[in-house]
Amino acid sequence: MKKFSNSAIFAMALAAFMVLIMVISPLASFFWGGSGDDDTAGQTDLPTTVPTADNRIRLGEVGKLINHPFDSIADGLDMSPPGAVIANYVCTEGLEGTPMESLIYTQPYDLYGTNISRAYRAAFWDGTQLEMDKLSPRKFTFGFIPAPTPYQGYPVLIRNKDVCSIMGDPCILGPRSKVEAAVDVIDDENASNSYPPFSALLEQVDLDAPYQIVSQNSRVAYQYYDAVRVAGDRCERTITCIGITENATACLNELAANTTDSLECNMTFDQGDLNLTITRISGDFDVVMDVECLKP
Image (cartoon, rainbow, N blue to C red):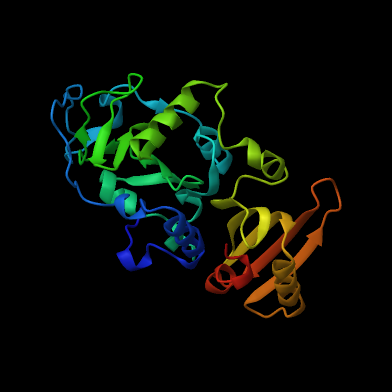
């Protein structure tokens, strides 16, 4: 997989998502921070590991691992404790070698020393964040410090004083309280999670897009799901909304009435119980991703 320069990390489609996270969460700066003032007293060692020829450690040698389906944003929400307000999911295989390649997250490479095949980010009402990454290949550089105590048998790896990780398929990264809450959700199928509030919406959409966003209570709609796909040499977005705002409706209607070579837009309305509004936008990548009225 191509490793991008830092200037390409955040494409326009990510801007709205990350801006909102930065507004509601003071932890954003810690996710990719240095080691900080780690409290390493009383550490215990991980199981004996044997580095590979490239000095990376195989994921299976860490100990007990997370194991959960991770094929769409619904799976990410299903693993998340309650309270997610906005979440984003990326499948890199569907983006490589396309105009949308800049949407691939590159920070995990610096964190794990390997690429990822899938990534999920969520921000919560309480101002915290949670991240999940599937490593590809399943080995990593040991840039973490083992915590003194595991959690439910899972080794806990400390990134800095604010962020830790529990490894697996996927790896989970965030504040320790949020990571432990995610483990509780994954290990107990009866535990509450973040999927139910979005279930009515997500049951109406195809969850196979390589780039997915779900949000609630934004300036666009009460809830919306944004699926971004490659369509030849063009970008295609399908935005499915419950309770779309008047301003967003007016803006999108104006776009639909002013089709250009670089941007096409059409809207349909479903008068069923959910009163869905479905908007399809296609065209040049930068133009499609920069539609102002679809930014949270």
